[in-house]
Every structure is written in structure tokens, then in C-alpha cells.
Image (spheres, helix red, strand yellow):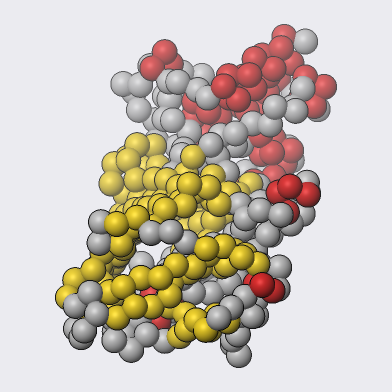
Length: 373
């Protein structure tokens, strides 16, 4: 279930996703918080940057430019985040999954308060918010003319049986300001080398978003996420650089959702070039795709790998090199990985130039041990 408004960060564990969003305003009286449609202050520009760190964490950096045409006005701004849920301990449940939150208005760092919703008498006829959700809020004085608000924070992404990880952002709440749009919008996504899905469009009419790769990477053809009637995502893999989107007079009808599939849950077919089937299950065991990840589990042991044959072991051992663009000399590896839209071999790349993470290195060692047996 998606939350709404502000920098709303919805942090849910286990079988659900996390969501967070643009700033909005509240009416505050005592402990009562009521979301408002702002009628005076306009959102002129937003530069939004996502940096995925340590596989499941995302650093968020938001640079807002607001314009106040009238006299100085003080409003309350905040965001809501549910407590963690799922396979967690009591300490995690009692604290929002947000780190290093800061807010700076016109060059000055602001203090904020945090309470559970049932402590604030939150009121809304349209928003369904649980009484145990957390709310962060702070007072902002918008001077006449241009105002800058900077936000930074880190939050933990969601995961499920279907998804290795996913991150949501409620960009539609940008329409809650006086101009009902974001006049100038820039989004930067700085991912790791995983294979992510991104929205195909932010409009109800399906107008394609103008995504661009700033660096080296690959897009897939349009695909359907879950039970969508029409294609609503495409996949992207960034080898170097980042993904960007620039829009003027941005009035999104849909929010941002990015993430990476658990490829062994039937999603592996999306990896093929041009959205076409490129192999038969009898040719390649489906369990092989469980190891298509840039973050191999530390709990994998040699016994887990015993179900794979020699070629399959060689394939999964080299996934981390394929995703970085290594030009394989072995026909079997080259032919297998050439089936996928994201494999773009770089003849100039040497094996010794590739630096794996600690998890990847440990996984490669385990696979080599299984191969030797």
C-alpha cells in the first residue's frame, strides 16, 4: 500500500515495498496534523538524486527551489514513514528505517520532531495512515521570492519473494503545491551494476518517459510488471555512469518504482534481447537464475551448488564478470550471455581490471570449489 505526500518515506520489511515522496504542507493545531493543498507557494524546480548503496540502501538527495510571490509565510512540512514489519526484531519495529536525515532551508539546518501518528491526532479524509506510523515534521518560513530546501537521508529498500529489492518514490505529490506541477524536474538514478526495472511512463496516457543513460549501459524492450494490461516498465543495466530524466512542466500521474527481480521466480525471460524467449527451461535449469545477483548470499555453500552441472557452475561463477562487460573467450559463456540485452562485451576490458565485492569474491571461491568436486 502506497503512502502519500511530502518526503513520505514508507519503509516496510519482508514481503512489501518501501515508499517515499515529495514535500507537502500540513495545517497544525496542537497535536493535530492535516495535509493541505498549498495555494501560494510554487514548486519551481526539483533535482532528485538516488544513490543505491550496499545493495538494499538508497541515499536520497533532494534540491527544491520554491517561489513565494507574496509576503513571508510559515507552514509545517513533514513526512510519514511506517514502522518496519515482517522478519525483524523488536528494536527495528520501534524505529523508522531512516538514517542521517537532514533538512536545510535557505542555508540553515532545521530541527524536526518525530512522533507516532497516534500521538499527533492526524486528520485526513483521503489518506489511510496507520496509527503506528511515524511522522517527521518541521516548521518552514518561506520568505518572499526564491527559497531553497535541501533534504538528505538514507533509507532501506524493500524485498519479497518476487523482488531482490525495490524502491518507491511518490513523485505525484509534487502537484500539491500552488502551481500543481514541478516546473523543472531532474531525476538522477545512480545504481549499482544490477539489472533494474524502471517506469515506462509517468502519464495515464502512456507517454514514454525520456530516460537517458549518461555513460555506458543498456535498455530492454518494454515489459509488463505483474498483471499490468499494457507494458509499463523496461529494464536497464548501467555499467558506468547513471540514469537520468529531465522534464518541464512535470505533472506525473504515476509514481516512481524501481527495483530488481528475483530472476528465478519466472522473470528471467525478461533478460532476453527484444523481449523474446531465447532459451528453453530444459536447456538451462531455472535454479541457475537464483544466482544472478550482484549480492550473492553469504549463506550459499558448496552443498547448495551441488544441484548444478559443470557448465551451469561456470555460468554463475562468471555472472559478475558478464555484468561488467567482460569479453569471454570461451564459446559456451559468450553464447550464453549474448542472449541477454544487457551483455555488451568490451574487448579492451581485462579480467584483472575487474574489482568484485567481498560477497562476489567469496561466492566465486565457493563455485570454484564445487566445480573442482
